[in-house]
Length: 498
Image 1 (cartoon, rainbow, N blue to C red):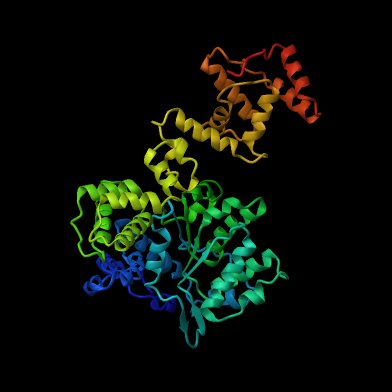
Image 2: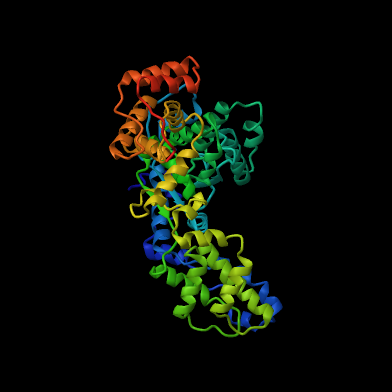
């Protein structure tokens, strides 16, 4: 990579090696020795510092490298001295059919509490957020901008958040000028793109993308399409961040955008008990105590801390902090495994069910909390009927207009009954790539026949039968009329639900 007199690149901090990055992010000590001599009442007010302890793990260092690449490669083709860039910026009538081959994208999803947002903030803090370029450029450069996805999945709200963040940085009035109700969504989008180009945004970080799942219809599609458009038409790299629930966004509607995800996708799950980095993190936090005695970190303490946190960093920090707080209140000189368990039981009651679900490794329990479901959870081959229950629940949660629902009601109208009907429909859609209702119905009937069960309800079907059923439904025939038609041609017989 060469800078070639590109002011946007030249203004960035120098590229650092892994040791320099590690040292810049590391903070393994937050208390002074003298702090341990303070009265307990004063020590309580220092415990909040524990959240500042930071140990850069390998995945954090990997993320730093990718963010550095995002920002720097994104500027390769956006040189303020480039005549075409100048004309695109200030002359709306001039259009270039220009695609930015270096405008990469990256997604980071993970279990809540594993440190995604904090890692991004720590990494980005090593870059200036605003740089002013004097004459002849006379422009503000924003190397990074971070906004949260709108709770309502609205593109208009996302644009307003964008304007507001830039106003906070530059003291401008973009929200007032471009974010009023007088502007349509399309007008806001155009203004957002213009500002992204004008202020040379290096990377746009969109956090909490799982909120897109709360949107309906065109709003949801607009936001996803906009991310792709912003990267392709303006050259701004995008970093999408969210919980495990966000994998639905990336795996379904973001497929087309993945062509530009040259830096890949990152998935952060909870640490495992035998992870070397987990032990190092626990050890670092354990050594930051304000009690009179700090016992060595035993295997028993390690086991208790993992058992009560299941490798979730945020819960670990809270538990060690709360345990110190309880020990100071009670006048204890040191903390032990028994006190840790007691504090966890009494002070972490809200997250206890989630921790219990992760610990159980039971799909039926984990599926209750979509933010916790591991990336490969539904593809697990050793979960037996429990994994089928996950698929069944997912199918039943589909919206009324989905292929799954339509196929289900067609089969129901045909008198087809099967104890795994939802799962068979899902298999027909996903495993056999069926994307039309008749195709799905045909495949489900074949699957039922192939099982050779006592309760099988169909024979291989002449396409004319399905056509007739579809025609009867179109004519608003009743379910009984459809059933009687199928019964008359000896297509179905009376069966039980089993």
